[in-house]
Amino acid sequence: MRPLTHEERNLLEKRKAEFDEFLEGMTEGLGDFAENLELPDPAMIIAKPNAYLSSISEFMQNQDIAHLYHWISVFSHERERYHPSLGVA
Image 1 (tube, rainbow, N blue to C red):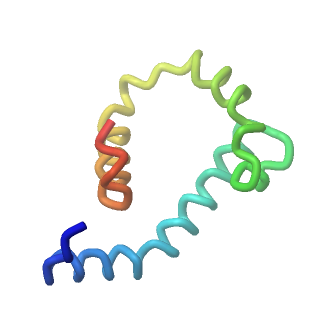
Image 2 (tube, rainbow, N blue to C red):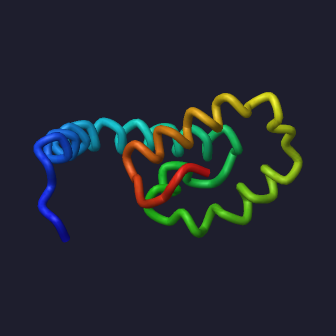
């Protein structure tokens, strides 16, 4: 692996500094999402996400998300910003 450039090191440090805040926001958001779907123990979605997949999948199958395209696009770019290896969906 090649050494990071000065710019890359700065970007990495910035992302590391912002990651805890990002993760906290995601954690709260996922808990709220599970609570809004009236799933049992919504806070546990972070610790045991696989237990919630079938319920979320069932809910999402019946959703019209065309009007959310902009939000999905923004989220995809934010995901790429924090996890470049995932790519933009």
